[in-house]
Every structure is written in structure tokens, then in C-alpha cells.
Image (cartoon, rainbow, N blue to C red):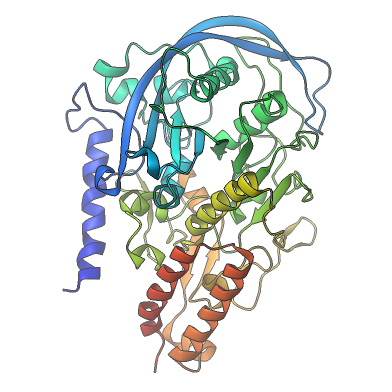
Length: 487
């Protein structure tokens, strides 16, 4: 058995262990921090992870005037309530390895747990470049498993469910207070008083980030509080679906945004918005859809849409074990589940790893934008046509336009953004690998395939849509994947 095949077999076993831990089938010690993210020891890579409990008095808010589609909103404090939540800080152990940038993530709660979506997607970039990362448990569902939308109905992976001995003391007054909580915690990170959560690291830049349902929260946060001086320097919005999240909700007075919500153009701070194919048209808990909410690029805004991608994919599970050194994660890996044992899908989920690699590149581009003032490249939009609007596809069934990659420029499969089966499978997309006969028709030789891969890599590197270290992983993986092509 080859090393690669042993590695492939090992992953599901590790995921099963993780599943038993999260579902309570294995006893969780009181001192165990629960965070559904990377599942390996960070210390050999020069990083550490610490959890802190943090408390305060938060406000709910109501808008002043109409919530207009331009996002130029004002709000006033409404009710107030005490909270006790937690943050998790991952940072270089040695201060000299810190690059000066802190990413503060609004943790995602769609899976009935408190998940660091951006850390999971971009940890290889964060670690190799020396970022500090802070995950904020800003919403109640990740703590108590109540309210909000869920992709895993009937399953409770909240902090209190998994480790009640550690987390039962947490107090969350409801998501109407989440913006105030996130804002206050960010202020304590940037301007420490009694407790310095970064233990003396000097912050040069601070980025707020949120993915999926947290992207909806992030857009509302930006439009309400993004102009605050001396706090966040830039914003990373990842995979928004439709409009944005409510400002206030039941049991308090509800305040819902309109179906079309732009990120305010008078922010005058860099905003990077990264979108997959799934995000544009998928039905969600929000009004409208992301396609209708498209914005033009400006001096302070970039929209990157990535061809061949799904909202979630194989990297969401296998990537939890990626230490950043193996080209295994650059291969097309076939899985038919979104979560092992819990969510088996009706078809093979999207195994295109370019989503992960583009998240890495997007964070790098945003950080360079903040550091040097040089804006990232403007990317082509995914091509949409017809009524109702839908993606235009090429002869291989892959969407045209958008940020390209070897996976669609030298394709070995057709990638879809919308999956089939259970509700969570919808966002994991599909992948249909080409048959030997199809590959023989497309590629005269393996050398021809590799030449197309190399050409696509060079184009991506020229626009900085791909990081050099990740380009090398794709090169190595393509050597192995070329063996699928008949001689």
C-alpha cells in the first residue's frame, strides 16, 4: 500500500474519532476547549492556542431612520444585558514571528456548533505568514443551541452540550446583542486594559472576518459600526448568501434589512468579498440572493468570484488535518459525505480545493492592501445568462468566467455549486470525474495536461490569485493526477 492510500484511509478514521468526541460518545474533560477547527497540535508549527472567558454589558440596537440598500445606516442603543462568552486566540509563540496582523473572526454557528470557518479555511496561510487569529463566540446558538438557522436539525453540538462542566457558566442574552458583544471584544483586543489577550504582541493591523451566516452578520456589523476609528482596518466577507442579518430580532423589536443590501461605499476602509458558485443563487434564510447583491469594484472594495467552487467542499473535513506541507490536499478527493456518519449525500461532493487556496490568496491580498496601500487585482465575474439567471458553462460543464484555476482550465471533472440529499449537502456541491474515454478525448497526452496546468498556474500567480507555496502543491498534485490520463 502506498503512502497516499494509507493517508486516504486514515482520514475517515480520524474524523470518526472527532465525531465521537463532538457527539458526547467520548467523555470530554472539563479543561478541554471545544472549537470545531483544525485537529492537530499547533505547537510544533510555532503556534499556541488559548481560550479566554470575557464578560461585559452589551446593547441591542434599533436603526435611526430607514434601512436603505446602500448600507449607510445609523443605529441607536436600545436594551442592555450582561454577557459572559469566550474567545479563542491562536498566535505565534515567538513575538518575532508575528506579522503584525490580527484576524478577528465572527465564529459560524450554522452547524449547531461554534465553528472557526476562516481559521479552518486559511490556517495554512495564517501559520506560514505569522498572523494572530481570534475567534469570537458572538452568537447564542454556538453556546446554547437555540434560535437562528441550522443545517443540522436535531443535532446539538453547542458548547454547553459538549462540555457542560466548562461552558454552563456562559451567558448569552440573544443575537440582538451580538454586534455590541463583537464590537466590545474587538476593542478589548485592540486596546487592552486589564487583560492583554495577545500577551504583548504589537498590533499593526486588525481585520474583521466572517463566513456564510457570519458573513451576513459581518455585513450588518460593517454597515453599523465599520466606520469606527482606531479599531478595524479592513474587512473580509466570505460567502454571503442574500441580504444581511437582522439588526434586532425576537423577543426584542425586530429590525430586518431590505432584500438588497450593499456594503456601504462611504466606509473608506478596504473590504474583500470572496464568493463561491453556491453563494450566488442558493436559497437561504436571507431575503434576496448574492447575485442580486453584487457590487462593482471600487478603490476600497474587491469582489472575487471563484469558478468551480462550492460553499463547502472536501477541505471542510479533510483540511482540518492539513499542516500545510502535503500536496495531498491539492488533489481531487472523492467523498460522498458532508460530515462522516451524520450527513451522507446523494452524490460525490465538490472536491475542488481551489476554494481553500483562493481564501489563502484573498487574505494575503487584503493584508498587503492594508500594509502597502496597493489594491488587489480586479477579478472577472462568473458569467451569468438567461432568465431566470443561471451560470453559463463551457464544453466541460464548468462555469465560465470568475477567478480561474488549473482545476477548471485543465479539468478532470465537472464541478457544481449545489449538492443533493440532506439540507447540509446542498452547500457542498457536486463533482463528476471524467471517464478514461473522456480524458483521452480532451488530452492528447499527459504532457499536454501538465502544460495546461502550468499555464493556468502562471496566470493565477501573475494576478496573485494563488500563493506561490500553494501553486507548488498544485504542481505536485497534478503530476499524480496526470496518471489518470491514458497514455
